[in-house]
Length: 360
Image (cartoon, rainbow, N blue to C red; front, side, top):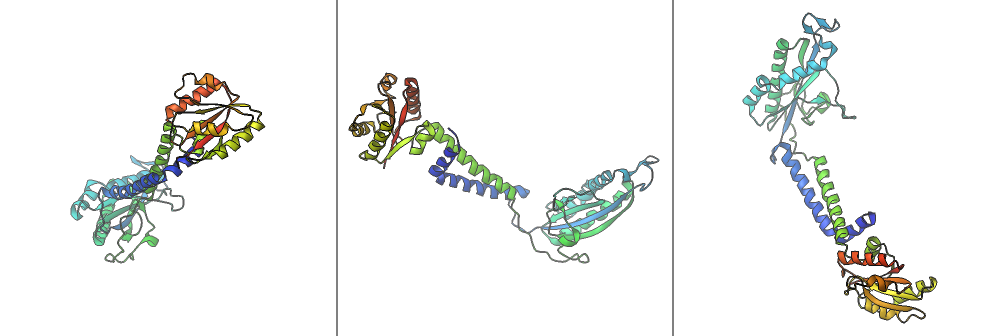
């Protein structure tokens, strides 16, 4: 049965390999977050420069159409998208990258609400440039903003456009537009200031995913393995896998006094006068238990009956009023345990309980 008890028992038994698998997945998550940043592990500092263009749609305050021109005031999202497209076009972003190098990364991020993490509609259009040199990032961002303004005046039906925020180094993620004043690392009047180099950042989300997959996956794997193998390795396994109460837990070579006392008390309370002792296989230490409990006054003991080897086991189980199951740690295979359960079910004799014998 796969339940919370199964999971806890498997974790207790296999905690070392689970810890190793989880650690390996954690390291894989860290490595993956580096590699997914730009395809390589790059330890060089990166600088992000941001500039913003501000535009007002054509026909502000007038009718929906003026001649053949669409009134952008009715939907200035189209205007913003057109300007963003110009920024990343071959004649703007393409020429800038050709001039400053292909390692320059250009993005046109949205402005985000820092609390709700949702985009904010605005007439501001932002461009971010990431480069290994601060001055390169500043110059490239400023050049993109200037080129965009000039091209947009001729190509997009707008009434007003300007570079509202000149290029400045910023501390924000290149995929999100920053707050120009609070996130700026240098003043607006400076284009040569130095910024603190930002180290390659780790993706916390990526690491958490790898960590979860490693931990949860290994736990489920070992729990499933314990269920499928169905070898009894503890007293808890008997109750969990066979649904039989454990009356006594004996160490190897134990005299069986504890088991005899438990059986005597239970049989007397239940008015049981005959008992059949069974084991799943001959490796279970049923003979020793039979010898010990045979001395109980007023109790007739039959057995041991090894259910995996006796073809008439179901009939022999009916010789007593109840059945006592004896299982040794790791002695019986899953198939033998399945067969034992089947024989007990066929016989229909009530199961008094089980005695577990450990290896140590």
